[in-house]
Length: 115
Image 1 (cartoon, rainbow, N blue to C red):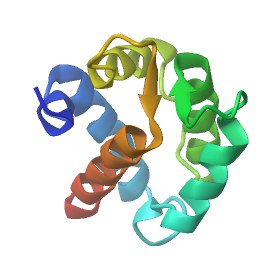
Image 2: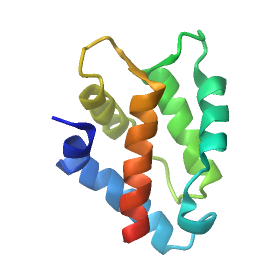
Image 3: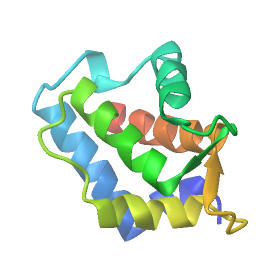
């Protein structure tokens, strides 16, 4: 399945509902979406071993910072992050690329903007 297909699963729907609720509450900047430049800064901040990929632990930290920056009302549960991470990690390498993360973030942001 593609990342988009995974975002349409119950887990993806939960994350979408979470981000849509934050948007509906008027949290953060227009649409609550970070700019590509802001997202790039964060990926370098959280890629602790500088291998151009993100581990689950790095993604958890990154998602929390995004939540704070976007002024979302509450943290995304770790279990939900772990489940989505596992779906994005199609080769079971225990890492995802920045492009995979950005693609998932962008799709969620676009869906959130439509809400």
